[in-house]
Length: 274
Image (cartoon, rainbow, N blue to C red; front, side, top):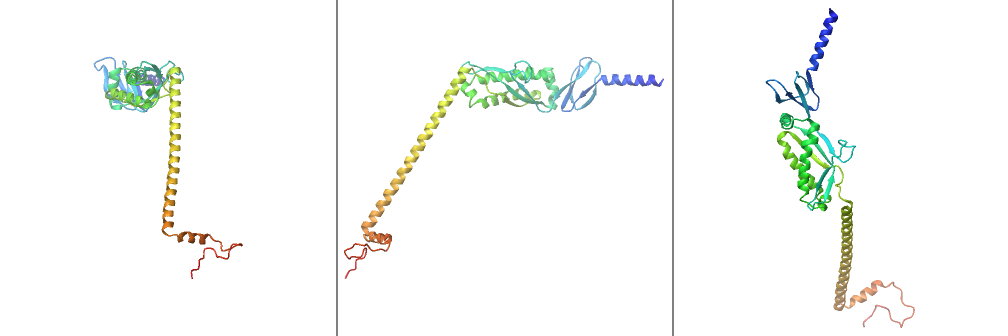
């Protein structure tokens, strides 16, 4: 009898567990009823724990912590498929790039997000989120030249795309925290060679300009020094003309005190007037 009762309790426990759903740590749950008068998505989100989910109902989970996903041409990132973004510049030149996104779900709007798309996190990443990024990237890049996309306005392009995607998903509770390039923008080899050649020429021109500026600065310095010396000599000459005794004083200052070996009897620098 005890054995039968124990089995009954065990069976009841198993059935009870089978009719329960769990919301794991770092997730928020949305209860979905497929049948009955309460069919639909419950507006109230569920925190971490176990919940009764009878037949015809289940719990959908969304992450409330930051996740990062990379849309890449590489089979070692994201999915095995090629998920790179393909777009064009304003002249129609074909470009491609890998883009990564950091995202999370606002717990207060998780039910709104599920009601909008009715898909799980993987479905959001491969569907609506990817489509929104692609559409904005295509639109924004079509307003720029390849030189700008590959060079100085590369970050600006993705920042604009990020703002577009954030604004689109904000009402539904999907927080797009950041978009970032997961590598260089890929351009045709011939175009890349032209860009690199132009950059090299610009660097050489800048170096030449810097050299010219250095030579000009050195020449100006030499002119200034010569001008200063000339002015100093002019001042000195004028002073000597006004006071000829300055020459005798300087000669005396430089004299080492020795009289010349051959002399007509005069004493240098000294003129005794009677």
